[in-house]
Length: 160
Image (cartoon, helix red, strand yellow):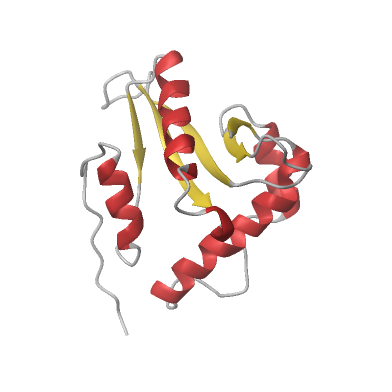
């Protein structure tokens, strides 16, 4: 398995995974997420792939055909070096990690996560952050097993 920056050729596999992760969230929070959709259109995805401040990393098998991925990690560079109230640091925010349903429990998420950590460390980032939905306890357990801890808690009161 190899983890590398995504290219437009990876879009079919990324789209497939985007749909899978959306369904996990739609099942857990149908009041927020719409089943049968994706987070990004193909045009939006092309723009993200080309944006160095929003790197996407994909895991691919050594013998993968174009467009076939095992999983991905979407990231966003958050630069606080000119902030008025925050320390002058750069944070790499993991917007999303997904492993294709057919490739789960094979170390793909771990490989993607470790690649992201190494990439951020090589570039001098202060930290790596992410949000995890409470309706996805498996994801929370995975991130905790990778060494992540709670930084802040987002709370809500649903208004009927």
